[in-house]
Length: 249
Image (cartoon, rainbow, N blue to C red):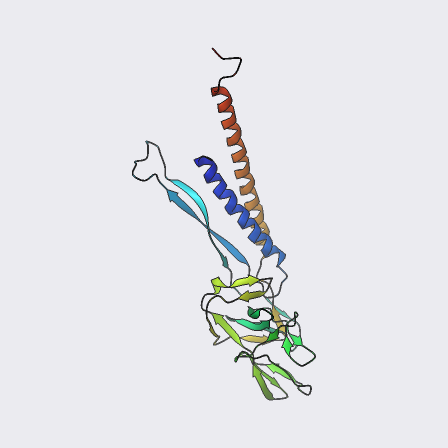
């Protein structure tokens, strides 16, 4: 593979990854608490060491997929009226206990298990500020949740919903549409701004994602046609330079 093919291939690989990220964003446009992702590209400049470029020569710029980062802007609130549906308007994530361990989420669709445990749709228990599952008694009625996460029933404080902020949100590892594994330490959120009776929608903007998908697809197709044309050019040159039975001396 020569330099031209290497440059074009690096761009194709980057655009292919960008298309996969956009497709995942669109697939989760209706997933509560989903945070869209973006890709970051960079140009890697190379120059032959110990040599001066020839007249008219330029530094080669390869396309490098540097990182995929997460857009943490809160999604729109969707009011449900369910007293156990919770939305975070500030920074932070709820913590739920899964079979694989604690996970972070902004999907606040919670309900009650038969034993009174407050859990998400998958049955993962919602944890309080001490890391313990939140449970309500059979006689606990009139549930209210304050903006700081204080959960009360019948005027009696039962627990405080735990909301944590990771040291580096960009290092959260997604698991499914709304769960994350914290790869860095977390600390309690000072002002989570919890809203009761509402859930946070996805922050994906479908129109913008579709526009990005069209542009990315066009760029991918352009580079694919470029590589094909370059291959045909090389084949033509080889056919003209190599001797054939008809032009042998």
